[in-house]
Image 1 (tube, rainbow, N blue to C red):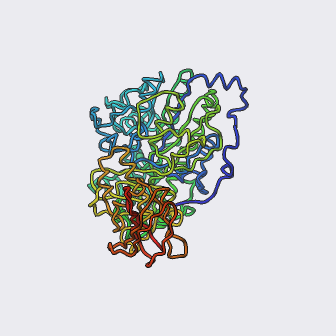
Image 2 (cartoon, rainbow, N blue to C red):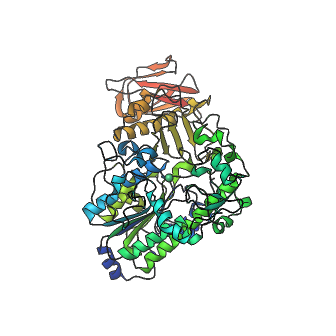
Image 3 (cartoon, rainbow, N blue to C red):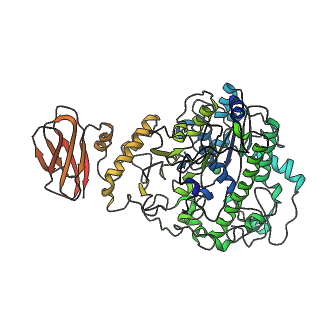
Length: 631
Ligand SMILES: [Ca+2]
């Protein structure tokens, strides 16, 4: 859902410096800033862009994340490079696009495969900070990347009780259960109406959205069905102070206290608000089910969508049930609220230790959660609820002005360069770009569009998304894929309900916009040396041949404009001599031709309109033909 409430503090940008933790004298600031900055990276899992009150959510209040944003910069249009954990995390860590780090799915992230030239060969920002910056790096919580990429971390605990490396798949959760939860909240017998959470192995009371709702544990066990985390919904019995969220925050706070006199990079990687959707009663009760908003797009039939069958939506009809979905939203908001409370305690600890001025704090999430939008749960798709993420950076002491908002399009591949830039440590090149120029308002090139990827094996869903000027296009990565192409205009259609391509009989109307986005995407693929360059370049999205048009922007040697409310066309030769003009309709029939030389502006009366026309200048110079839509 998009909720519309603009926080007052974004009415003006760069409103000035606000000291954190009281007044600081100039020489105190100087003394602190001479030391290399610390980094505190806080990440959630599956928190969508609008699960923040500063993003306009009027039901879920996140005062601590709002405070962090108010003291720094909020990126209003931040997108994940890939809307699933492992690929997104590898992009965050290395600054590389998914194709280039090679972790195209969670299976590879979990595999622990030895490093090879094609498998996450790049250093992570923490490896660079360790090797070239002398930083002490520790990481708490969900890792979900290959084990070898965690070699720089100096966590005191290296192995789970299973004997496995603490950064191996799920080892950190194993450690929480075996070495912490078993002591403070041992596994208890079930009360009537309770089931065991398959994740924490503690009792919970399921709600109506739970796949095992109405079953006993024995019935569920005998069903032969392997229930997955997203199937679990309800209220967990674990006391708030011992939840996995509390545990992660306490580990982080302990590390801050222990490392306060070093130059550190600490990551706090929360598991939630990822499934299982099991907040405690305290947090669940904060969001009464009946007060939860039903997603606008919950009943979208998706007849002309590439995601008709994605996330098993047709097999999980309860997520398009307007009453049942409120349980998911209530639980999800409770889990985010709990994180916000603990983020507040972590920020308070930074203040208490006198570290806030010289610590860059980054907050983001690896991807979003559909929460019933389009009748879907989970992520994996390019739709806003899944791909658009929160991103906040605070770095006071004259580095990042408070109350800054950036609305340029950015990706989490930009974080690697941003971190190294502000920490003053040079690292190997990546695919992203430091956000410093956008933050300072000095970069006029970055942020014009963002591209995200989905390359997991099959060509049965869209492979690329490009978003520019509120126009959002999805395209598969081969020319021949039967996947439905998609174009949405977020200004008119913020819930992405109307695909302007695919089976839309009027899709040719959008050929100019499609060509612009397609050309930008093809250029992006070329710049990143993508193997999908040819597949995307040669795909025809509107039925109008693309090759000439793709060349148009790349060789932008002359310009054409329709003259509003007339049958005229203006050609601007850009100061080059043109010896005449040929115009064809889409069947190749000539509708206009002249041999009159001109330099500069020429106006032509079209004998036919409206329609799409191909304009070819006559010249000794190599000009590409262009297409234009005349209304
Ligand atoms: Ca995730």
